[in-house]
Length: 163
Image 1 (cartoon, one colour):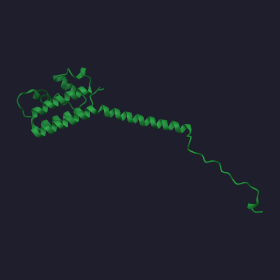
Image 2 (cartoon, one colour; image 1 turned 135 degrees about the vertical axis):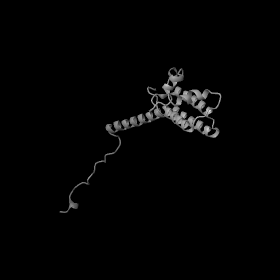
Image 3 (tube, helix red, strand yellow; image 1 turned 30 degrees about the vertical axis):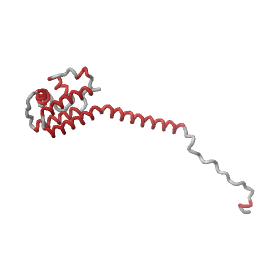
Image 4 (cartoon, one colour; image 1 turned 90 degrees about the vertical axis):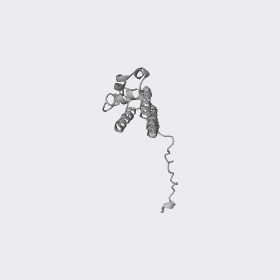
């Protein structure tokens, strides 16, 4: 007897298992992935927003330096940098902590968080005295470069205990 002569019905295969509807574990996994992606996006956006004043300050410093290269006026340079530091530090900290600082207290505050204090030592003369003089005083190029680097570092590094 051959197989074709046997009284058998055709073989019916079960319906293949589909992807839909998803099992509860997949829903939980998707929810966790969405939450993690949302959290990463939120943290990135917050960091970007918090650094807006820092980016703007560095952009302003670059413009001040470019203007200095054109006109070579050290008095205007020091005045603009003094103004930039004050405005930027007011953006970093509450007005009550920064606005009233002058002289030595202002220099100490600017030195917070810097690897080596600069504003209380070498930068004191450049930042506190030269911007308010009526005559042009000469700052050596090496001192000026060091001053600009210290200002850039102050703008980049966070203040200890800042918000």
